[in-house]
Image 1: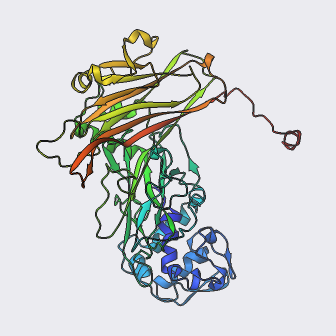
Image 2: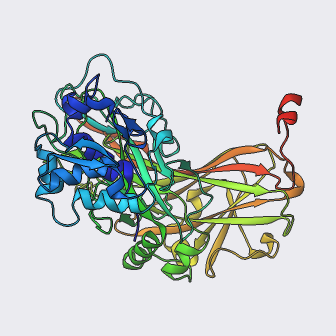
Image 3: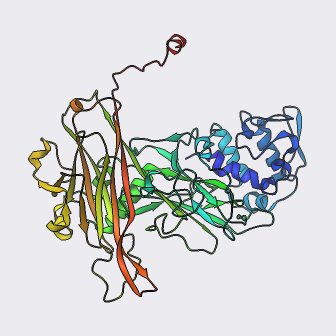
Length: 527
């Protein structure tokens, strides 16, 4: 059974049962007993009566005072020290999470966390990315957004770049210590927390545990098949759930003041996500070039392709096909490392394949019966920031998909190649057509896919003989879609290409045989 999260499951509830949203008692400038519940690390320290956590629940004063309150006592003695039961009086949050809560209740889950080793999963690195409070003119009401770039204040386009999937404040963190992680792939045996920074650029606070209570704020997290815009997806369980086995995907943000930021979190069990994606791919019926859905998902391991959405109670959710430019209440992260170890010299050259999916993000648009044939057309482009001649890029497409969706006059900067050009290295799936990138100016136009998805694979060929340690760069696949830009005054429209998604591979060349270099003689001596 997974452990409860200290930060997301427990600490955020400790705040609202003990008056932090009202800036009183443990949220005040001089908190009672010196216990400051604005600091998530405070539980691992002491109050003026002593250390707050012990080896087990009964020896942990912080647990004991909550347990005493739950049992109707006014105080409790731990290791000869008398502690007052808390909270001092019944609050709405204490009623919701303990008195009226189904099993497991807050005190029980707190005990489970202590017995599980008291793992400190405070996501300090993620918290450090939260921008300062938003100044200047604010929107009316509660105005939510998910941060798509460092310093995001919720304005659009603001500083959000076209490759927004590369810059969003969405992170994987280690559930044992809260550290940000960037794994080369998601192994089936791993578990992470998917976290995101959200903000409120409105002039009104939100959250039902504000005082007085304000509008409820919710968030959801989705992991998708590695894609350029749209693909089958699996919703993640929210870490605000008291029951660690609950599949409820709605994360509740208990309070979010005007102009402030918060971190939301979801449980990402990789095997569970794999199983869900396999099922979703099978249900989609997409052509996989002779692979089964399970083979497709497990072919090269999985990478982080996630979307986080927010809303206030009563509002609709952003569409999963939205982008930060069409709806700021959504952000996306499609970023994976592409690490090359010069110590691995065979085969040389080598090709690494990365399977991905493209789909319609504007399929919800209702087009007139006599619509323009250009509406919904997609353009795929490969953009690189690499030293010249470092990589050769390929695109593999299932044969049936190529025959159905691709047209010769719609392919620019690529040429058809046979499997001999792969130097004996297998293509990513048995039934394939392979295109090789031959120019920086490139594009492939694909008609609107409707309810279907197009599966492909990007191949990156490299030779360790031509790479140098420390070489870095990026390879991005960008999907644009043709949409009408309406001129109301002139009663006409023109077609414009809108970036709807993409993904980025980050190249990092290292040599595992190389010993670390010391920056100075003093560093060398110290070590």
